[in-house]
Amino acid sequence: MNHFKRSILTKNLTIFILFGPLFVFILGAYNKGLSAFDLSEMRSYLFDNPYYTIILVITIYSVFWIKRFSLIFLPIFFLFNIFMSVQLFIQSLDKLLLILNFIYLGASFMFYTFWSDELKDAVYNPLFTPQDIEKRSDYGLVAELTDSKGVNYLGSITNWDKEGCFINILNNNSIPRNEVDFKLKLKGVLFCQKGRVVSNYDRGVGVKINLDKQVDQEYNWTELYELINDMGFSPRLT
Image 1: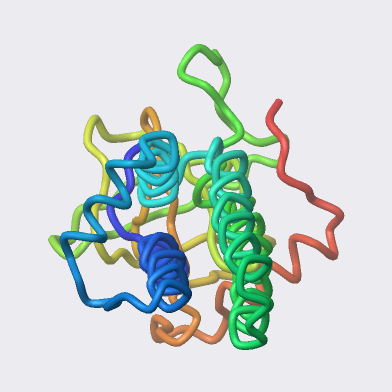
Image 2: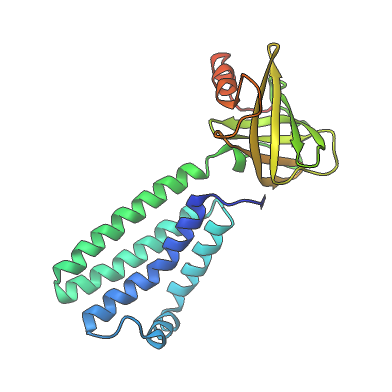
């Protein structure tokens, strides 16, 4: 899957991961009475712990590129940092280290929980593979996307949630990029909303709905989502 736009959570989590080795290094330097701003010590710390460095690199890659195996490496990375920081506390029995450990533990748990929910978003889950012959939902929900150049794309919605949907493009060899106007007519009512293409898989795109921007129409994505739920529709393919 290709990704065109990364969420704020993805960026913040990547920064938090990079903070991990710095956090452990600062605690170690504090414990030993060394300078936390000695970059040569920081480099030595990473080179002296090759397994930790490998886990760090894989974790950053898996999160930044929004890979599902990040759910495996992220807790391993967090537990690695917590284990090393707890060892430093045991050596010194310094209450400040204990407090910082609990803060890092709480922040790690919060990020992991939010990240687990992020990977469940419809824009990252097309619910089909390139080998599938039929890539339409049971309900025949066909939407129209219009890009900034006025090019129209018709597509079947294969997955959806409160904040976006995944659409398999039906009428065009190319795919839309960046901001798009989303339109769908259901039960004689036209629903419109601004959105942004954030991902691409096969001939489909994940569209993150901009709930703050609405096309000049009475009915929007939120109302469409509620109507679909009221009709008993759930994301699945034929």
